[in-house]
Amino acid sequence: MKKELKKNEDYWHEKLSPEQFYVMRKKGTERPFSGSLLYNKKKGNYVCGACGNPLFESKTKFDSGTGWPSFYDARKNSIKLKRDFRMIIPRTEVFCARCGSHLGHVFNHPKNRECPSGKRYCINSIALGFRENKR
Ligand SMILES: [Zn+2]
Image 1 (spheres, rainbow, N blue to C red):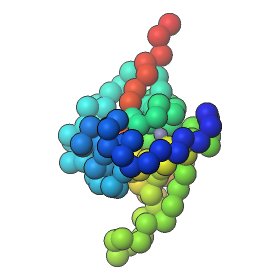
Image 2 (cartoon, rainbow, N blue to C red):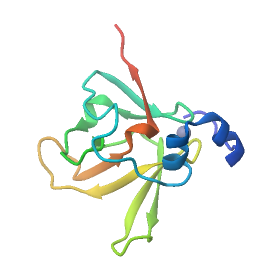
Image 3 (cartoon, protein in one colour):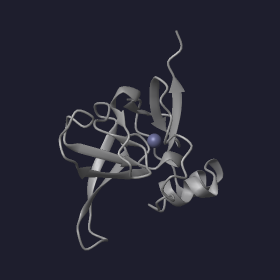
């Protein structure tokens, strides 16, 4: 991971689209099944939509049926987690470790072939970019 990126909210307001700003800086959630990367099956890396930090590898992506891109693991040291008590049942928030942008939540998930870790990183598509592996 590159050095931590500290920017103020004015910077992000300029840089991000209104939808991205709402999700990534205001901790919003995009509508399910609305994201452009939901059905992406190409090989590559999912990166932070705000700063480009590589977060998830395509091999860890699986179809959870929830309507948001789901991954069973994140790249080492690419994300930070924080308990979120805004709902009755506490959730664990997922942030980009480099720029601090909100990405989504991580949930316990039944362990199976698709989700061997038993953790499901439920990530807003709009908070992600995709870099295809070209060979
Ligand atoms: Zn970032």
